Length: 379
Image: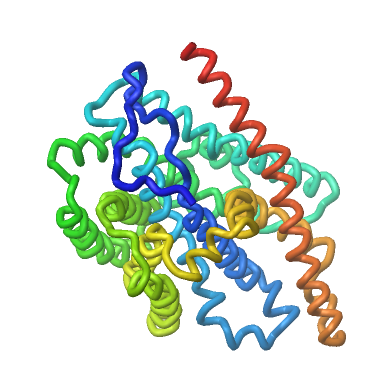
């Protein structure tokens, strides 16, 4: 398991960015699949697949229905990981480093985003040719498609268009554009100690979470949501850098943080304002990589699942769109429980297989190809 140990990596003078990349914190990679699965469960419920096949699952509505908070976990994780890899490289603002950073982030998210967007376009065209209604036709407008191409579709508050989970990728892109400015501000104002980082986390949450709560029905919510949680993740990395790695209390911190997320999700009906601080605690405690739960997150199966999590997140809504038309849950009303469980398991298997295929065929090769092009241009 890779740890930074608080040391700064050498900074490449030509780019201003850290070289070589930091080793990964495997427990955080494994954590990603938990966030993705929580979002998938939310959509299985919101599309009536799970309630239609297993009405008894509504007893867990407090947890499954709160799965949209998994996106808040993603935003905090993203801020932490981006700061972990790039914060030291932006001691000052450099146009070349800025462009290179954005290119690397595009290499990470854009190929799969574009592939899934084109997949939805193909489905919409085929559905219209054979006169099948996929969903709300207003979601598939030309203007929205163009906005999706340029990753700005969530900037006006729109969260459901074309491949609807991709709204968060648009919000992430906004955070990526701001990150070099955040990094320079950290350098200028001396955000280098655990005390200042802890204060930064607390102030960001104290000021930002009420703003998220107040704008929950306004058009600014996606950008407000990502800005607050991404910034909290950046502060969290600085806190992590100065945290002592040891057993004892730290070994129990992660399971307690998970339990706290569950309790607050149940108690608050999954209000982001209430649950987000517990998610911050989850990310920080997982980054310390201490204890059996962290070891489980860092295991090979969980790390691979975490690597596939982005593909699962980006493809599951498309799979649901197709399966709901081919294997509608309502067709199995009144059938034996084993049949309905098998259908739901089939949904999950198809989503998992599609995600792995998208990761192996689209995401990983395209990212490697874009990185090779950057390396050749730099050489």
